[in-house]
Every structure is written in structure tokens, then in C-alpha cells.
Amino acid sequence: MNELIGLRNINSVNTINDIKRDLLFFDKLFLVGLSEWKEIIESKSIKNHRELVDQKGLIPLNDFIIYDGLLTMSNYVIENFGNWEKYYNETKNEKLENRNQNLEYLVNEGKIIYDYTVLTNGNSYNTIHKKIAPIIESKINTVKKQNFLEYFELCNLCHDLKTRILSTSYDEKKFTAIPCNSSIYEIEHITNLKTETYNLILEDFPIVDVNFIELEQIFDFKNDPETYNSIWGLRNWISNISKSNKSVSEIEEEYRYLKYKYEQTIKIHKLKISNSIFQTTIQTGAELLENIAKLKFGKLSDLFFKFKENKISVMESELKSEGNQFSYLFKVKGKFR
Image (cartoon, rainbow, N blue to C red; front, side):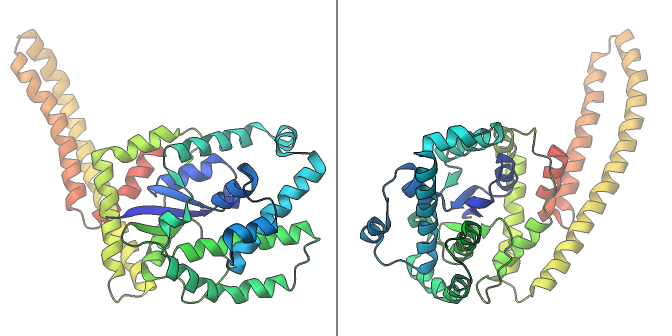
């Protein structure tokens, strides 16, 4: 199957914990706005509007406002602080430093990507832009650029809209790209059934406290063969049901029913196993002493196999249970609760 890419507005990344939660679900993250940030702020390859036009030519209104917002921000920092280094020194804090260091690490590891040419299908991208242009134009008429707060809210809207555009214009031969967050801006006919099904799962994804979870723990967990297969089981269910003629509400009903059936089946089976383990423990205690006393070491291995059989029984039950496609959700909850 294709790589599952989470699309996130760069302005919505407040702490590294936002990224950790996303990486429990997605293979990689695409940070919308990071490419423009690097061009304007980091490399300073575009310093003004003339250079923007020279290098980019005619670009969609949505993209222009994103660039313009960054140029406005850069000019403000230079006018008030002299340069970005002084600005960082005066405004940095431990949480911000931690976020930026981890973001740089994830970019280097390939877990965060930002190159639009890698992700998008050009023709579809331009077509969707035409649908969202009226939304931006209506906002421009009510925003004064002199009011920084209002203008940067408009820039954030453009980042958010670009996230929606990318979710419908990516290269489907290589990726499945889904927004990490729902949007407050309604755009008709811009999302497909597959995206809406993923959004359904995302909204119901286990709430995990990631404060003390290291990124490497998440990667190791997802690379475990058992976990890896459960991830693909979930994605396979989403892909198949997205091809059906069912509505989103019907898919939600089926999802909640199957998830409930799976949860109840596993609960009952674990109760049976717990009872069996309790009985085995009592028997083992007595037999262990007796066999050690009589030097019957062959019997000892039989007792340990009983515990191994119980674990295998749980795994078999998970595979056979109705709704096992959602086992990954329970694995995440069990591992990081």
C-alpha cells in the first residue's frame, strides 16, 4: 500500500507532542508552509515581492498570501530586532527550542517532508485552487493589512486551505494524504469518501499522553511485526470500505459496531485467560516444588509452556475476532496508556 501522509498546517505545531500523536497514525508528516518558511526566513532566497514574482511567476492567490505573510513578518523582525538571530535570542524558551530541535531531527530522518513537487499532482492542484479562490477573496475584503492580527489570521486560513487542497491533489500512485486536523472552513466537494473515513478514525483515535514518550519509542513500536501488520489491517479496511457505495454515516455505524464487537470479544477472552492463568499459577506453585524436590526437570518445561499457550491463545483470538481490523487502536491504547 501507499505511504500514509499526514498533512498539517505548520502554524498548528505548538509543541513536539502534536507531532508525536500524528506519527502514531501516519507514516510521515507533510508540514504545509515549511517550504515557504525556508525560502523566506531560513535561506532568504526570496527577500521581496519582486524576487517572489521573478522566481515563482504567476502563482495562485492562496500561495501569494502565504508568501506575503512571511515577507511581512520578516520585515517586521528586521525593523524591530535588526535580524532573526537577535529575535530568536530574545524570544526563545525551552519548549520552543525542544520543538525546533525535534522538528529538525524528523526532517533529517525523512519523517517530516515539505517539498510540494514530491507530493502533488500539478493539474489537480491548480484546479482545486479555483474552488477556494472565492473564500479568500471574501476574506481579503474584510481584512486590513495594517492590522497584523487580522492579516495573520488570513495567512493562517490560507495555510489551512492549502492543506485541504493537497488532500485532493496528491500523487495517488505513491501516497495517501490526509489532513491531521478537521477544518472550520467548509468547501463543498473537496473531500472524497476515503478522506472522510480516515477523518472518522482520526477523531476516534485513542487519547495518549505523549509527554514522556520518546520519538524512537513510537518508531520501534510501529516497526514491530505484529503492530506493523495491524496497521495495514486498518488501512486495508479503510481502502476497501471507501470503494463501497456506503455513505459516511453508514461507514461510521459499521466502524463503531465492529470496534465494539472486537473490544467485547477480547475482553471476554482475556477474562478466560486470566482465570486460566490463576489456576495454572496455583498448580504450578505446588508442582514446581514437587518436581524440584524429585528432580523432575522435564516437567518444569511443561509448566512454562502453559503460560506460552495462553499468550498464543490471545493472539489467535485477536486474529479471528470480528472487527480485528481495528486491533491497532487497542494496541496503541495498551502500549502508551
